[in-house]
Image (cartoon, rainbow, N blue to C red):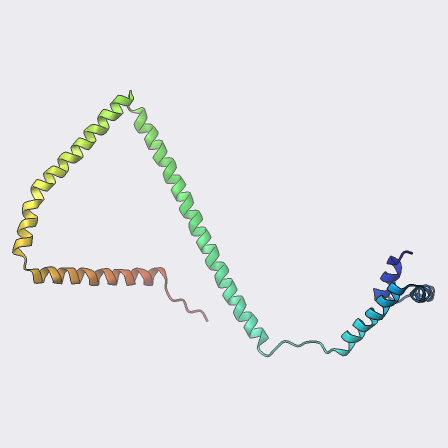
Length: 183
């Protein structure tokens, strides 16, 4: 037996014609599952007629608006972070492309790989020579400063450097993470 049309008639909120009511009543009397559905559906309708509509708790609107403000602030922060990462990635990609172009230009300026090796070795030797000259020039100056400056001054210099680093750290933090007050 096909129960679908009768189940639809039971739960339908549209008024039924006299013929449909008669057919539905005859089917309910002969079919146990549709009879159970009719009883259950009647109980559900009675339950909803008896129960009052739930009202929101006091202050619901203000709580919802506060949550909406927090949600919008988080969404804005996420969008700002995403935009900064996109900017960083695009800048890094552009820098990489420029670097690759420069490397290709540099490598094209040499005829053979041996020339690249010789040029690199000459540059390295020049850096070693520069470091040696700096060592010869600065070691006497450093020894003179260490011997002539009293140790109390070294503690004062180190303390001042620590204070300056702390001030710089707090300034950078204040600039990067300002307190925002919104009304």
